[in-house]
Length: 417
Image (tube, rainbow, N blue to C red; front, side, top):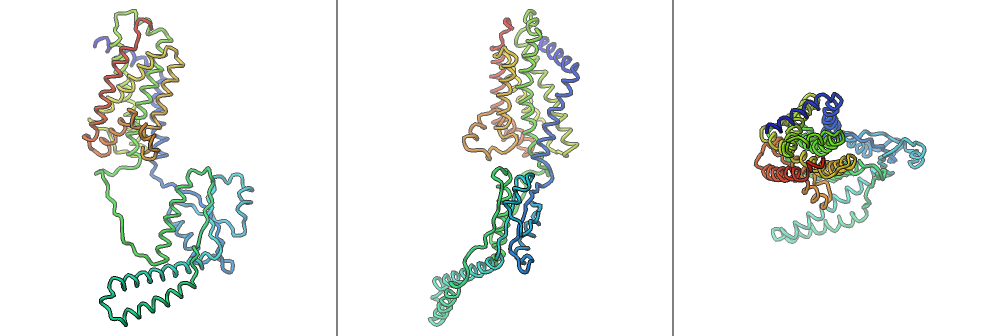
């Protein structure tokens, strides 16, 4: 242990002496938190520009129903409504405005109000007919023949009148760019508004309602829920890429070759490196959390269980870096291997977005990655305050830590370095 402490002390001093290295070491977690925290965990609601061309005019003025629809869309807070004149040809307008990219245009056609009102009456009449038919079939035995006959005669008259009503839907047209990634969101919001608009038109009352309650006791912001993933991703990249680069640099400078000539054992060298990386990971993680608290007001602060899991995760990913450093002798090859492992794991493990958003086969791939269990365990502990749900991540990371530390000791060719 004395030798391991000496290695740890020497590596720590070497790191602190490099002002540039210290600066960029702190910059990486800070940028990770600021960029992803702002993109995924920002408090402000996302708004989308929606151009609306209203062709449903009477004497040059928009009809009452079309104006009401535009006002409802505007009141959702999701859209920034931009009106296009009715005499504008959309195809020409798009061609003449090269900066008009990711366009979203909603076209309200002529006779929208009339068709919508005719269809609402048609639907209401159908509801009345269905209701009367249900009453006769199920409760006709409680009525006299004259009462039943009167209802049936009224139904026949209503059917004849309904057949003469317009049954054509009042369709609106949504035009989107095929490369617009926000198009599904825009389409979904507009569909929800149209469904509510339809229910209001035919006088439908709510039968089922949704109430909401929080699973967690504390009131977290959006960035709090992403913070465990940020911490896990940072520790993973710092462990795999950082350690691999360090080992390669020590080999290039001849440091390891000189150490191999001393009585120092491989295990002491590896344990010293792991201890240094654990300290570095905790320091940079605390800097990330402090920055998150100052800028975003995060409340998900790691407790004892989370710190223990972070320690285990750091050992796992740093030992993976030691293994890569032992396998690849060429500096560029070792660096490329570290990047090839770290970056796919960062984006495929669900650290930044839910795994459920991925295809089924990708979800299976994500659940084979240690980073998945790392950030999932941190989320269970830091957000849901439920350490028992992190037992599987604890067990998996514990086994992986033992395996990769053993492999690092075995793969490192001390005499050949």
